[in-house]
Image (cartoon, rainbow, N blue to C red; front, side, top):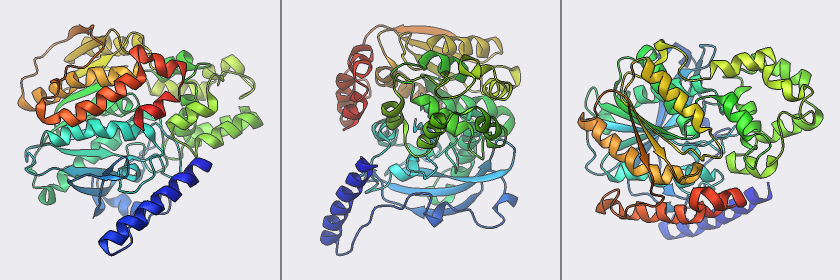
Length: 465
């Protein structure tokens, strides 16, 4: 909490100087938990999913301080909770000058947070003078801007919903699809065509949202003109991920997953009685903390500890077999049925040495989707770690998005391996050189196969700042 106070002081000071030069005080944005914009109007549940409930124009910024010279709006829209009830969340829409009018990109940043205050929400972090508490979203803002600078309107939703249901894949999937509907409904303001083409992108936590949106779209939102999905470091199996990282430097992702899954809009009604019975006082403290902080902070607070420990809960190693927990985790495994198979082409990329999301779970999802008739391009980033793979693999995903819009992506399933662990200086084209410089800096900070991050998780902060 001390760091938050320091951030607040810094941004208040900046606001004073900016306001002095402009003739009026510019104040940092309100947290979503106290911002009236995020509160849906009475009767919103009677609106169709994707309906715009409220909109406003905002100023966005790189790292909260460097103004982003594009038009931007926030849309509060109606979407759907796990139990089918109506909830509302926000997407941020970026429109560059001379934007392409027949398309938009849906960008699903890995905000990986279960903070109920909304401090981790992309819509909060993107705003000018917002303290950069969610470091992952901060660095991914560079990737989002690559799509903007290429002339695309970009929508980036708070797909975890109003109470930060991190890990609840089905909720994230419908949150993404309804954000696409909301952008379509905003077409007159954006100058979009009546039925714009859409391609979705997401990595890691954003891969949860992307993978589930791709899975649910044929049945939940078949009217959308989806041209493709690009997903990397995809957490296709939450149980597999939990076992893989428990007790490691990245175990901190697990408390926030439990906090997210037990959010009211997710599986709170089912999980809270179980947690009340099995959590130790220390375990409850861990879960309470996870509801206050973002992803990187969770890593610092729970590194090398174990969720499957009786220090946290009374069932020990059997906790993942507890019937309610096991059933919910099973419901969040991608690729289990033919009815939840992407119809648009999919681009997947993953590293065999990924230290957070198991490679084997991603290849299993690929095989299952291909078996059900999906078209999947699978790229193995041989010399990447989890963080470095998003950077090394991004040019391929970026070019896939362009090809998907152009309609030149072939059908069927294919596999490819990238052996290089560096970036081609022209990988994104000359016009995107500033973005590439930022990615190269991140790659250098992370180290080969994430070596620096594995040795010191604090490197995640250095990579961003």
